[in-house]
Image 1 (cartoon, rainbow, N blue to C red):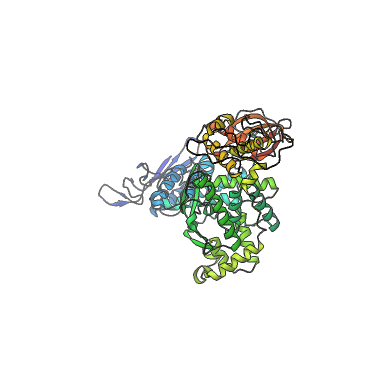
Image 2 (cartoon, rainbow, N blue to C red; image 1 turned 45 degrees about the vertical axis):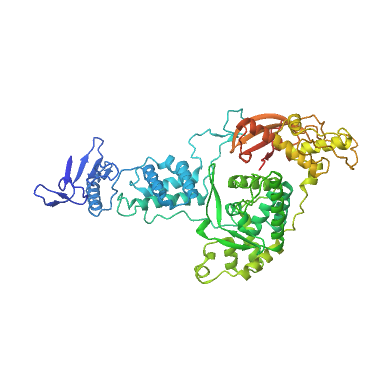
Length: 617
């Protein structure tokens, strides 16, 4: 049985069609009985703007006693949708919709690169694999509900019943660290992001004439989870700051400044020398550093809220001492720093910013080793909590943190930022901060606790001078001889010689004049210490210390395992782990490596348990 209603719809207008005499006619609709007994209802809806093919909205009625009446109702409903221009005008898939949506967002730099990258990752991982092939205009509300249910079920969208969560993606023999898969759903905040991506794409498609009204109108986003900020306690903050300074002066200053400013990670990384006014004791937050995969770049500050944050006297003094230390290291390398240099950098000229992801990874490893359950963004919570507890008004706190509007329209429109109030805030925050960590002279530290390769070379020669193996007044080994003996670069040997001169054990030398060994008034060593070496012994991992043990080491590059090897070292000695990490990284990536892309997973050889995860940031 085939029945039709209306005339032929050959016009591009889906609502009406032209007859032979040029008169307007209603759109055509048909009802067909299929061999299965079901009834197919189909109407003409014009041309698809994507494929330029005919669109025929269709509905199938299952066989049954009321099928004929339901088919008539369906035909009326579909015809009304076409006449009122409420039907989907394309058969494009959800994946095609999102591809065009992302392409449109890139035009004119309307959206930040980090936002585009984050949204694309969610699209690739969670949207396209589940509903990507579905027609975008076919019951979209049901599609999204199906997607949300799957996202809450399992974040990897597993399909296997005997799936195993492996400890690594490389070929291996499974042990106790590989466990049966347990489904864990996505966080509500992530599902909400997915919702806003899709609703934005469907709304944008109205401008492309894919449909006339928003097909997702009335669909609510998942209810947000109320935030529960959990900043570190003052005691935990003191432990974190002290440990950061113990590890490295630059790292300690970064953590301290982040805690004092309450700034975002990328904002602190982007601080340059010109952004610090030491006389007015102000940090000017103007830019931010972001990272998309391996690409690190500068961008405008979030919400375009540039701000000036007042520093307390002690923090300003600490910054002055830190920058003097940075300049001294640069001058020793023959580099003159300018005002465009980054405050925190791994390069001698401070021309390259830190990688945000590497900073977060290092902070996470540090607090995990301290047994403190916190994350880097909680430092902003700590800053805000302490300021509010000290009685600082909300508007001033919001201004220091860079919140858009301070939380209410009244604060955003009518309250003004006051410098005097911000100065009081800086003083109040400093009063609640932990005590200033004591800074150790790196030149003196290298005598007894060398860490870098050039420090080990200088310490070895210092012991030889004190013990009499190198006689005062004798000609010192040349730079090339030092480099060849210890199997290091000429630059490393130069730095070792400079450290010996700073200790007063090596003369300056000059053109055509070799430096001489100077007499030392320090007492001779009673014997070979745990860290001592013969003068001709190359620099390598100390394996004779009391804590040395056979270790299973796994080299990770950008969170992916690339190499496993055995070594004997002390897992509690950062200097040994650093040398092992650098050596393995160079063997993997050659001479031009970025060491902060690597980390070393340390396991006991006998137990296989993870002892530490080490990075040389």
